[in-house]
Amino acid sequence: MHWAEKIAEEVIKRNPNKAEYVCAAGISPSGSVHIGNFRDVATSFYVVKALQKMGKKAKLLFSWDEFDRLRKVPSNIAKIAPDFEKYLGMPYALIPDPHGECSSYAEYNEVEFEKSLKELAIDVDYKYQAKNYMSGMYVDGIINAIKKRKEIYDVLMKYKTQDSDEGEREMYYPLNVYCSDCKKDTTKVICSTDDGEELTYTCKCGATHTVKVREYNMIKLVWKVDWPMRWGFEGVDFEPGGIDHASQGGSYVVASDLAKTVLGVEPPLFQGYGWLSIAGLGDMHSSTGNNITPATVLKVYEPDMIRWLFAKYEPKAAFSFNFDDTIIRHYSEFDKGYEAYKKGETDEFNTAVYDFSLIDGKDTVSKVPFGVLSSVATIVDFNPVAVKEILKKVGVEFTKQDESRLQRVKDWITVHQPNKLYKLLNNKNVEFYNGLNDEEKEAVKKLYNYINENAVVNEKDVQQFLYSVINDEALTKKENMARQQRFFKVFYNLLFGLDMGPRLYLFLAAIDKNEYLELLNF
Image 1 (tube, rainbow, N blue to C red):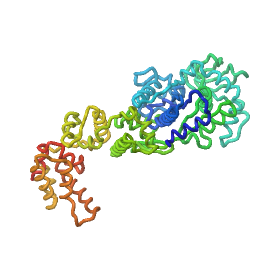
Image 2 (image 1 turned 120 degrees about the vertical axis):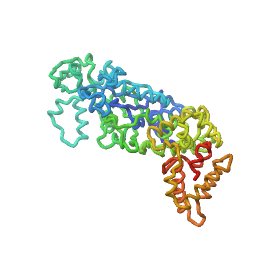
Image 3 (image 1 turned 90 degrees about the vertical axis):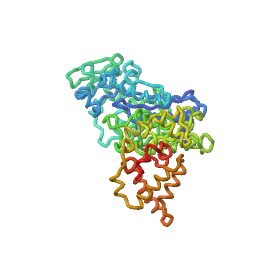
Image 4 (image 1 turned 30 degrees about the vertical axis):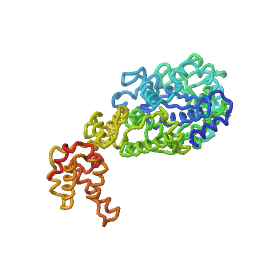
């Protein structure tokens, strides 16, 4: 059974007769949303899919926590807006977009992420929390929290190491009040009426105001109270979060306690998930600008593949997006698994993985392997017509549907692996050839003669020929592998002036031999 199906069964068990189940996710648009945040969405998305597979009505509710305060200026924003620090303490939804493209800083980051979710075919019911708070939607929850502020304080103190302080308890308010003058949360509530309908606050900017809570739309509950309040308001049945949320004293643990003991809300089923990283970047954080967005990943990974990666790993399992040769392995695994899935040869778990991952289901069209495309595309500057002609020579059909994968190969190589931009030398690499020993020179001569004498160079035949020239039957497999590496390095240097190159036998068979033959003629 797939992990999402196990969670779905538990969700149904907790509330078997609910008309529609709500699986939630939420992100604060503190910067460009990174691919790690997508796990929050993906985990809930697959539980929704599992519930629907079981015949239940379910939806994915996604909250933009855009009424949170700006805590830190991301490094990429600081470069284009050096004075952006002046907005620290203001809610994201009220900060201007430094790019000048959207109505707010929040909206710019939201639009970017929502576009990726659309490409990934993730059906989402969006909730914009600045709009919800400022419309008065949560005002009853705010007033209730003001009236129960001391009870909330007592619960919060259970999870802190310091002792409770009566004076602090008396003055505690679980609120972030944004000042009407400076729009920042550098405020302090100094008193409120017993019914929670009115409060007075002061601000570091010098302002002091008494406001009617039902009329003043710049008040937000603190996170650990806001979260359980919305669980009850939205009827959330399941919500994932980072594994830190479920630790002792973590947000989910504290919020669940507050939900049950103070707010009268049943906490949703929770699933912690592991962190994602990008090779060479470490952990990703939107607030620092150190991230790779889903849009960036979509330039090299197909939507189905991204969905597949998140579906096949248990939520707690950490994994990385690597923009090195790992991507070829990912594509190969995905393609191989898809072919088995179409034939009905996958086990129960992997069948569910592909059920959840494929946007077009079993009608998804098979494509030319990513590794094959990356081996030949650079030689013809990624030209689809030329790639089609090359692959035709080796019996591989390249159709219109393969062009999107070819584009991803191009983006992967040109942006992330420019060292793979292999170009044939204009002239013979005489200097390198002169440094070869007699055995290596003899191998070059044999390869030249073989290519020259055969009108048609077949990929399989040239592969067998190369290994017949390189391998020595008297040596072990390990020793022959070392010879292969040495001789392939010789051929690559004579063709490209590099120690590495495309898949050699595919290249020699696919490319017109007249384009490279003279480079081997000594």
